[in-house]
Amino acid sequence: MSYATQKLAEEKVFKDPVHRYIHVRDQVIWDVIGSKEFQRLRRIKQLGTTYLVFHGAEHSRFSHSLGVYEIVRRIVDDSFDGRPEWDASERLLVLCAALLHDLGHGPFSHAFENVFNLDHEEFTRKILLGDTEVNEILKRVSKDFPQKVADVIGKTYVNKQVVSLISSQIDADRMDYLQRDAYFTGVSYGHFDMERILRVMRPREDQIVIKSSGMHAVEDYIMSRYQMYWQVYFHPVSRSAEVILTKILHRAKALSENGYDFAQQPTHFKGFFDGTFTLNEYLALDEGVLLTYFQLWVTEKDPILADLSYRFVNRKLFQYIEFDLAKDYMKMKELELLFKKAGIDPEYYLVFDSSSDLPYDFYRPGEEGERIPIHLLKPSGEIRELSRESEVVEAISGKRRTDHKLYFPEDFLTEDGKKKALKKQILELLK
Image (cartoon, rainbow, N blue to C red; front, side, top):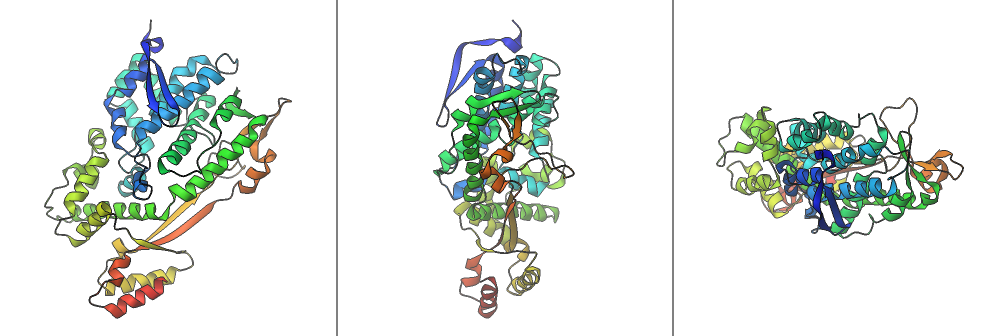
């Protein structure tokens, strides 16, 4: 028996609060889960700084990745099995891609990426193709199997059915994180009838379609996604924590470049500060490492690094106001000047942040950006794009919603001390 078709002597299961059980029958999948690169995902939170707002949001990218795998397993083993439009030889490939799609995420994901100009998808590819345990396991299937998995995750694989199961506007990734994040944050927005959606998914040519009888379940899914983004993912308090985290890393990097003598040398960050880090150094960083440094930096001699670290560790976050930088550009310049006069560095303590989301869209000829629309399969066999059939989806299609905030340390402006008149002037401007 080849390694690709080898089954476990007995099925393994993970107890899961979202899917009840996650089933593993394939030796390859079991071995990949046991690899050190995949186990690292236990130490990366799925929702970054959101745990500082919703205290239950401590779940990891490990559990999310297992959830995405389980959804795809149910689709290919239950909904698609035996259908002539589905190529069963792609089964193991799509299962591995589902399991490994988030492998390259760093600690606090997007904030960390922004500071060091990194791309987690690029690191997923490097881990899959590099000198890693995961690569060794995948190569046992075939020499080109790691590349195939990387191509599926990178959306370049020739079989678009396989790609759309992992990455589209209704894919296993979104179906898991909406439900999982709703469960752990305690909100009601992210729930939808996934069972119904899985029952009405069908493979067709180079895409996945939904039987038109399941349209209302898809509408519910899209509205759940819309609500989750604005109530959870873009929550302004979570964004405040992310702003502070970003500024901590910016400050540490600036100090290192200027030869600052750290009381606790940032050994784990040296390669990131000068751009010389290796893949192993990237994999050695997790959120436990970052939080340890933040706790140590609370006592650093540099007042900005110490203050920002204290704020993050002890949840003393920035206040915020609605602020449109395009309209209020001159006010921003005035605020920056007043902050400097008050002895508060605006580079670290006056931060504009913008969040934006497009809940659903379809391909528009001549526009940039790849969009894989959701297609409905009519009883006649005709395939129709979702927003052409659903008034609910049509109402939000192509409508990008953007939220602008300005973050600042209100406590610095209200505390007793010098320059009270100047600080009062700043507060009046901010109001």
